[in-house]
Image (cartoon, rainbow, N blue to C red; front, side):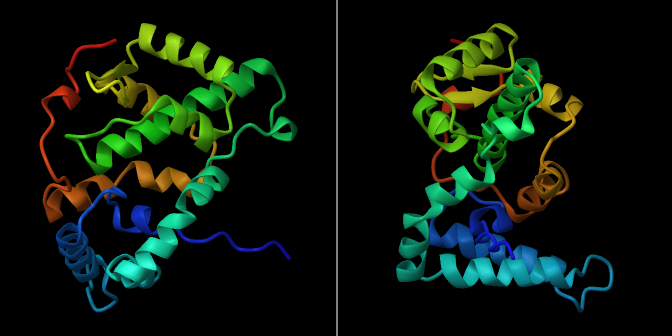
Length: 207
C-alpha cells in the first residue's frame, strides 16, 4: 500500500509560504465560512477539513516551523516530472518540464501578485531538472513571452504565459483544480501580500 503524501497546507489556504499570521487568519476565516458544511450554497466537507487542518498547522508557530522544514521535499515530490518511465520522447518530456515551470510560476503569481518571483535554482530543485536543461527551457519561454526576469533577478509568469498554461492539458489531474476557482476565493478574502513590488507587474519588462 502506497504511503499517502503529506498535504500542502499553503496550497489548501491558497497563500504564499511567506504569508504572515494576519493573512493566514483572514484567509482561513473566509474559506472556512465559504466551505463549511452548513453552507447550503458552497459547503464542501472535504475542502473544509483540508482548510481546518492547514490552519491548525500554519497558525501555530512551532508546528509551522516543523512543517516548513520539510516543505521543500513535499514540493519536489509533488512536482517530480523528470521520470523517464512516464516520458515517451524528448519532445514529450520537454513539454512536461515547461508545463511544470509555468504551473509553479502561475501559483507564485496567484498567491502573491505583487511579489511573484521564483528563482531558477528553486525551479531546478523542485522539478529535479538539471541546470543545462533548465537554461534551454527558460530561454525558449522568455523568447516566447511566457515568462519574464524581474529586476530582482527572479522569474515570473506573464499574461501570455497564463494564457499558454490554460491552453495546455495539465498532466497532473489532482493539481488541475488549483488553476481555476481558487483564484477568486483568495481575491474575495483580500490581497495576500506583505508589500507591493512595482517590478512584479504582469506588464513589467522582460529580461
